[in-house]
Image 1: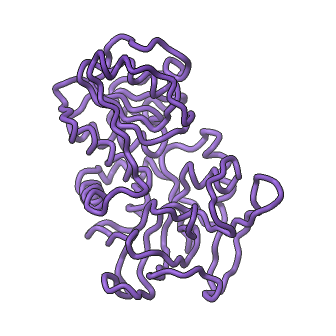
Image 2: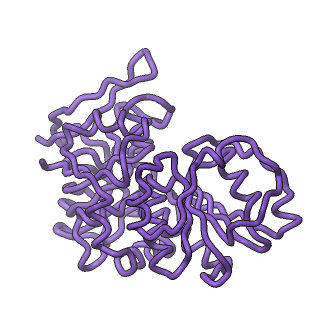
Image 3: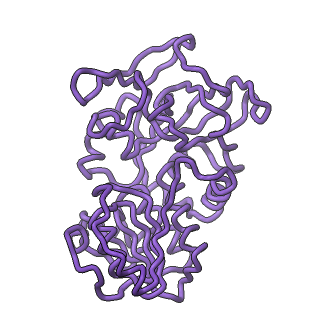
Length: 328
């Protein structure tokens, strides 16, 4: 028997949420069975748990869009019992059971070996927020962005993606500006590497299609009017990496920044990114993200606390990352 945070469909949008004792016979099919040690609570997980958005595609569901642990059984020759592994994205917590359980069966194609020297808890402190943050940094670099070209804006700066993007960019020598709705957290953002703190209220309402050229690049996890205003304020030839929709899926912009200033809007997909790009991102995270920054940016909770913390996360009351010790 093992414990899982199980979501069951109801007649209302919010699912039934319960810590449930399950038998292995109740597990869905998978190539690899993993003993999970740590998972995380992300924005998408919070939406699934609360029913605030139709994230779940199959019922019942175990949320948790990433996890780290050790292989128990494998029918795939790439993995053997005892191998340390991690997974993020790949439809877990949406179409396939996710990491908020002590055991989870998965498709081998979605797994990655845990990078050498990276403990499972630390990997999850990076997790599905740090991974797209690194993919965004890689997208900026692929499009030729260099520190000498000017500052880079990070929106949603107090969230998981934003906070790690700040640390990564600062480590690479970029001047980082941070947009947040929680100005009281300014010192925390500066400790991560930001040099200028911007009130998100200056970006999250309709603005002009072209504005003052302020930033050479940006990492946006917010979307909607925020992304539109960011693009409008990018310098000639700049790059914006977009990876999220916390404000909304819409993009109320014009083509002006792209055809008059040569701005590049680079979309970043973290769920189904090619294997080689995923591997590069995790290798770089293990190597480049300052490990000493993770404890101050991470809250660790037990599996039983995940449902309660989900509501706080959606209310914007969580700073940085939430790691779930599923064995606690």
